[in-house]
Image (cartoon, rainbow, N blue to C red):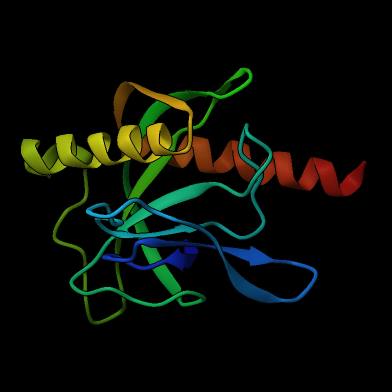
Length: 163
């Protein structure tokens, strides 16, 4: 599947696409000492339960850049909910970059190092806490569940287009 990266690995700036201008803008700056552990982006043509395009954390050998289109193999997802003014489901899909000449070695979330996965979860918890929100991971699911979430988000986007 295609993912558009909005925030590269190592960035303290969180970027968001401004549809009216057709450009990426800085939406927030993370606190000192905090940066994105991997590239972070979204799947065009999808609608997640929070109303935004489906979020994907993209594991790759090196950071990309805001606006970069990458082909990703889904390996799993973190089932999560977020509380700001109300509780919403806000899952995080996890994928790996894959090209015709660079096949992904990891195909399932369970293949990731346990410390790596715990670090990813802690990043999302800390990131949301810095924004005044609560983020709670309620499950770790494999590639099949991530693909089902992608299918639901594709259908939800098509439904909003036909309404």
